Image (cartoon, rainbow over all chains, first blue to last red; front, side, top):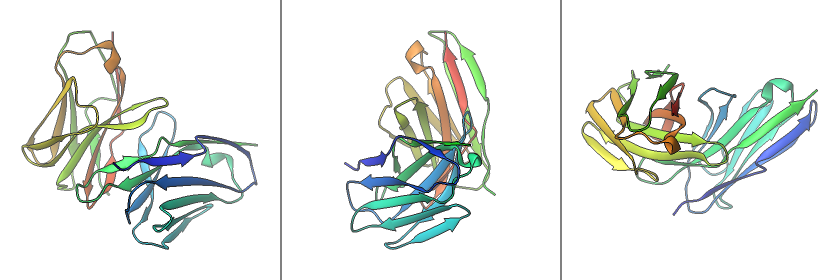
Length: 111
Length: 110
């Protein structure tokens, strides 16, 4: 059974700092997704990572995938308040079109 | 852009009522999903459908059923609502696993 673990679950950081969110998963998969959720809102797709070594960047966020280590990272560079949200990773469970989601990382960026 | 529309943003119902949550997508996607989201528990899959009239149980199907009579519409049914079904419900549709989510329905059962 595929399990997805994110850490940390809560992250409070100052504006201007860098940090990384980690997403580990338990069985082989080469498709991983990152989503963002603002309070009271739905999930918005951020990145789609489809192969080992994939790296995607959008503004201050960069996501990467290492399928051999079963690890994805979401790196935040020079954080700003607008990045405050909950970030989820989700892993393709293989063959069934289902995704297994991590529990989410609630990021708070303080001035 | 994909649009997934859930019929209500907020809904209040009473214990024992039969509740229908509706979801419509406009991209001809084969797959549709219903999740519930609770604090500390993340997203949990209730049911999903990979074609019209086809459905599969997710991780927490008890107390729920679904209907997919047309490709674009996927309904979640609470047969006899209970207070422990108070939650945020999210619908999603997908083609090749990238899921697109609706705005969610916050359901309160009193």
